[in-house]
Image 1 (cartoon, rainbow, N blue to C red):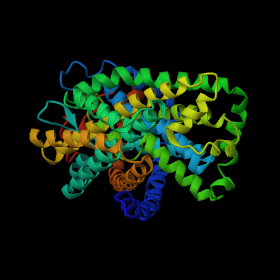
Image 2: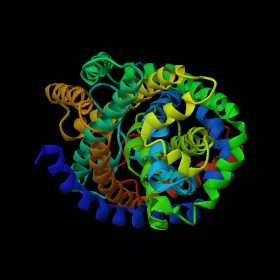
Image 3: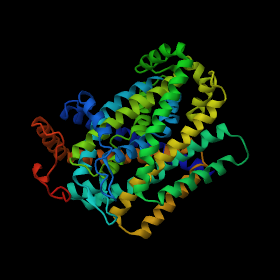
Image 4: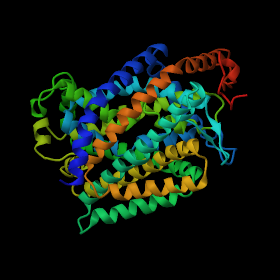
Length: 475
């Protein structure tokens, strides 16, 4: 039996049961957070969107620190990856058009969780030897609830989930798209080398270089993909009405072609939605903690908006590209999934064969920006366990090797492995966030009271908390 078959047999049952557990906590607590925040993610969306772009200069005066805008771009760089192209297509192929509807619902719920985890991460961040801020689940578990063992567990889980699992998924999907566009011998091996080499150049430049790359590349590529997708949609404009209709039609009645199980539709929407926007997983909380900002809630609101932008905008245009092709049975008849399904659909328009190359380039860049974002998270957690340059060097090498090797295995297996760790990570992290949600709500109350008093730029002090134990950076 091949090693890939063994891995599939091991991870398949674990993945199924872990997602039942993750579903309860991620969705249940997300709803609780939404109620506590009084629908902040929707009712205050104009304010959160404004904050996301208004922080371009905030914090940039410090050489080793990141501005709110830079952390927003790193966060979006991690979010806007192959999940926005290949992940959406896979969700449709395996869960039907209705999976897109559930991606929307879970994004709205998850954006409240993103606010909570990012705000808590800011409250409990700390400055490391490199002069920059670090934080995230491991830090707020240790400093907030006072449990070092859970902190270490979360740190290890993040390195495994994102430094290995998510990096692997990004790399293998990018390689698959490139292989679909360029046909020559040993192409997976060649693309694996290219992806690993370029990643090494940036990763070994440190977090600040990653921030600079993300701040320049992410906005351009995000709007570039939206623009390209809109062109593809317009070329199939006659099918857009049917596409939207299928999303709602199959949201509550799964198509018989995938077995007719509504549970499959909902769970597919949850998995692919969370893989794309990462709400509640603690990943973006690591990024949010690195911002040099005046109030924790700024990062909470910014990252909350990032979840909505990722799923409701970027994922939606990809879904419409695929679904405007025709009826669901016609899409399944292509016998494709992931990025190659998107390539086939767009190639059928007036864009023609050029679509293969254009989409492959988008996939490569999205995978690259996501990959370096995941490295940022891994570095933060390695520094939590042991702030040592030699250990950090080994982790950098590990992630580059994973990026290379992942290009040589199937996307399906890599998705399965990643999904399993993602469920475990999400369940543990969201429970810790729930235990610390009181601190996030106290910070939000302080933020709103300052805004109500006419203070344009609220400034946080740890005295605003009923218990500031473990808070070291807000004197």
